[in-house]
Structures are given as structure tokens and as C-alpha cells.
Length: 157
Image (cartoon, rainbow, N blue to C red; front, side, top):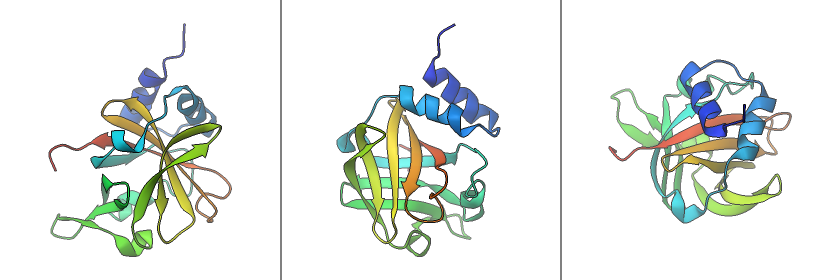
């Protein structure tokens, strides 16, 4: 039986179960890279729980997703307010972000660099409407292990 990263990815998303980081890294390694211009637009987000301290934290702040308007106009933490309206949580994100092509694990892929903190989210394509993300950086959030998440195109927004 051959390893199908897309099937394995969607099975993990559907289950919502805790995954070993090694399993998520194997899926990541098998996915193709993406270019900045391929990921522009609004995205809904979700977590890929792996035992990371960030697991469940985004739900608490009512994280909805990310909006990539252009390479230099990125809202990394689109959340819902008390009325259910979407807004860019600049306080939590220490500003907003930009998109760059960054080398990560030997591959250059579209990556989101936060304006106000030493955090980079790297992206790879699962399919035309789904990205897998890995949070990387120098802060205590990601120093010892990575946080894994996914994005799905949100054309309804």
C-alpha cells in the first residue's frame, strides 16, 4: 500500500484527533510547495492537533482564518467578535503580516512573516483549495516544536 499524503491529511482533519508530529511531518514532506500568487484570497483555518501548547488556543480567541489580499497586505489572525463579525486581531498578532518565498526544510514555499513577532507560517498545497501550514520561528510558541494547521479557501466571504 502506497502513502497518499492527501488522503492521510483529510483523514486527520476529519478525525480531529491528536497526531504525532512525525506523522504530520511525513505528510508535509510529500506535499508540493506553493507560490505567493497562488494563495491570495480569504481562507478559513483549522488546527491539526499534535500536543503543541498552542493546540486549542486559536479556538479560544475565535480564530476564523487568514486573508492574503496581496503579498504586503495580510491579515494573519482573522477572528470573530462578540457580534460574530470578522476582524483582524492585530493585538494578538502584534500587527499583521506579509507573504514571502522562504526556504524551509530545503524547499522554497510561500510563507507568511508576521510584522511584529519572530514567527513564520510556511504553506504547502494539499489541493487547489487546501493548504497545510507549519508555524515556525524564534518565540517560545515554536522554539521546541512546530504548530500545525490548515487553511481552506473561503470564497463565500
